[in-house]
Structure formats: C-alpha cells, structure tokens
Length: 341
Image 1: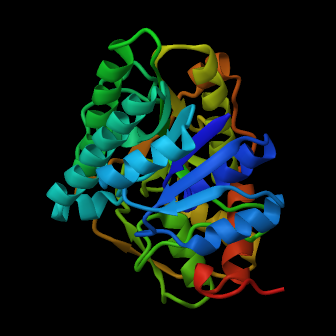
Image 2: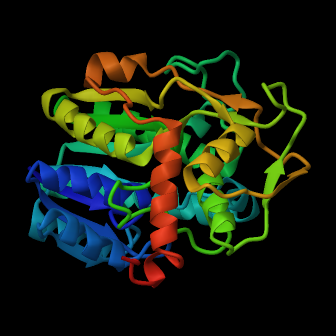
C-alpha cells in the first residue's frame, strides 16, 4: 500500500515507519523538522535496510501538498504532524489552532483531489478532559481542558464530518495515552527540542547529567503516593497500533475512535523508581506546585482496540524505562550526536 506519513521523522512517526517498512509498504514521509530530525529517517533506513521517499514540507503549504499527493498518489495517510505541548498551547493558542487545525484541513483537501479515502489520525487522550469516571472508554464525554486537547478534539470532529460525507471514506482516530520508551536497538527515541514536556525524556536527561533534578508537579493528588497517575504506553506498542489501524481502515469505512493504552496506571514516583532500577542510577527530584490544567489520574480502557483492531499492548513500564535509558545513554545529545558503540 502507498502510505503518506505526515510528521514521520518525529518520535512516534519514526517508530511507526519501522512497522510499515517491515510490512513492505511504499512510504512517503512529509515533515518540516520543526520538532524532529532527518537523522531519525537515516537511522530508520539503516535499521530496516529499506528506502522510502521523504519530503521537507509543511502541511499548511497547499502547493507543496498538492505536488506530493499528485506525484505519490497515496492510498492512505497516517497523520502525525502537529504541535503537541500542553503547556505551550496555553501560551500560544493561535499557533496551535493554525498548525493543527488548518494543517489538517489542507491535508484533507489534498486527499480529496487524488481520491485518497483513508486516514489514521494521531489524536490524544487529552480530548476527554477531567475524568467523569475511570478508566476512560471511548464513550466518555469529550471536554478538553487546554488548547492542545481542543485542537485534537476539533480535528476529530472535522474527520467525523469528512468520513460521513462519502460512503468510501474511512477515518481511524487513535487516542494515545502517554507514549514512552524507545526502539530496542537504542538507535531511535524521543529527542525533544529544549526542555522536555514529557516525563520520561526529562528523567533520562537528569540521568545523563543534562539536568540537575526532576520537578514533580504536584504531590497532593488523590493517588497512591500523591503524584499524578498516567497510563504509559511503549512507543513500539503504539507504532504497532498504527499498523493495525491501517489494516482496519482498508476493510472498513466511516469513523472509529480507539483508546491506545495499557489499562494500567503508574504515578510519577513509580516511574522514577522504575527508571532508577533500569539505569542503576539515583534520580534526584523535588515536589513542586501543581501545573494548571493537569489532572490527578488518566487511565485507558483499551478493550475496544483489542476487540476491533486485534491490538493489545505487550510491553511493560520496565521495558519503557530500559529502552529509554539505552537510547539516552547511547545518544547523549539525541540525534545531534552519533550513537555510542
């Protein structure tokens, strides 16, 4: 199958590329490298001994999109491209709406011009907002509490309307919980620009001495130890969910949303302990005030994905910590330095 992958050089995109190439799909990656590196694509080529097209472009560039779609003629799209930091989205909401919503509209218009009828969308559990009950299932009301989550929710609504506008259209919405870890080789992993927004890369940078300590935001939540509890999913499991979603979209039309998580939660301090065990290092931390917009707990009910996609998470929190440590310890500056032997 010819598949266009937007944001394919990013953290989740690069791991998904490994899955797609392993199934011998014909791939074109579109990425503007605003929060990714072309080095990730070079390493994917080495890991898979496979080649693919890659184009540096922005999904808001209508002319570039049209050229790519007309040249490549994709049969399906996996849409990762977009801004993704919750805190930043509250400071520059218009930038998030411009990138995430306008970019998705441009993508759908380009799909229409070449008759591409299938899309897998990188959504987020942030669409749910404050939990009315846990674990979240797909029927939980959507009431996102920050601009990032609202952009994901609005794009989901756009995709629902698009999917129902033609009986040929298929949209699969993957609501991720908290991706973590890295590929087992240590060659590709999470390499954020600046200060990491996610817990695991921040812990990893403390472990290698790039940062002095971890700030744990909130120690008085109603959880096992007072720190925030999240459903962490290994990025390789997440990548395999995209492969399952592509296969599902090939056989089904309409729109379906799926939670992609483990169904188990871990607190911040439990993640710190697991990382200390994986790295044999002590991770210094301090408890800081809660962050605005954070919730106490977020855990997925993944049964629908198991039943309809035939997908289930296989890897554990220990696997996530071990692989994240292997990636960070071999790549002290992420993709900025060659990997250590």
